[in-house]
Length: 398
Image (cartoon, rainbow, N blue to C red; front, side, top):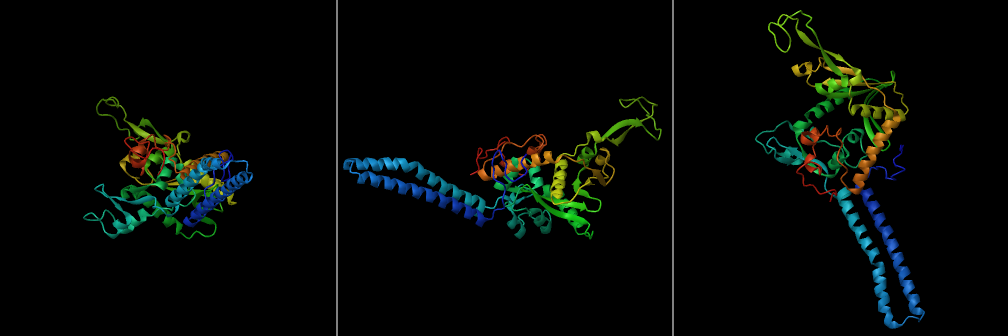
């Protein structure tokens, strides 16, 4: 099991925060090292030639043949030098001084696109779809020169790779609920809770980052906040239903597939069945936060998930057995070995893809919600080489 930044089997390099200056320094060092080897080799060849000439055993008419032999002997080395210089220039442009990668603009209501800065300066539509403050908040994104985050590694490696290496546009409407979650977190962070509480604590370990929502030192309890819909909440709670007699004693007035006339009506009764509870990737996410927090010396006895239901009080929510605005749910513990193995594997896949600028394998069925995410929800689906009718650049990113 690899718990350090380098996998002992693959020997992949760990993720490092690299600024443009650091990348250029590495590139320069690589070029200088190769030039040193190249020149050292040329000196050896020259000395060998001089020794042959000085020996007077080689006839002068054969000397041009010696030069030709030396040329073809050193040709592979010169080709390699050219490739190194080309790759360094390409890498520096892509990773250091090249184009800004990631989301660069919005998809407008009429499906046309506009860059962030142009949108903020002047709306191309007759009126704005939302306030500039909201749009600027939605446009904020983390820099690419950072270690992988816990939430990033929960998504498909191909999706994470494309978001870091390609330019794409986002629909601000699709980010609305995420913005609500951000605002909710900010309000909770501003509460004066005293020194016995950690709020929005930054975590890092295994070359992976994370942000802890809340930790109660006194009760040694970790809490993660989620803004979610009733469907996801139903799965997390393990809600299931059965048919029971109507407690009011109401009876059917006519016969049908529901029952015979005169019989007591059947109504749906919801109850929790923890054996079918499905936390999805939240289970690994919160357990990863627990692991990173414990590496800082804190003890975690209990983990809780606080779900704020976006569509609470609606008919659809009630039909799923969700009748409250907030649920406070226990999260089961997962063995550290399983958590570390999962996240270090996902980390190494992403880092390797970014270092080699090569598109990873297709995201798994679970990561794509059995294909539904590829159809409508993934923000880089139009760039993905695995989505039908996509003419992306094969497997290499140039």
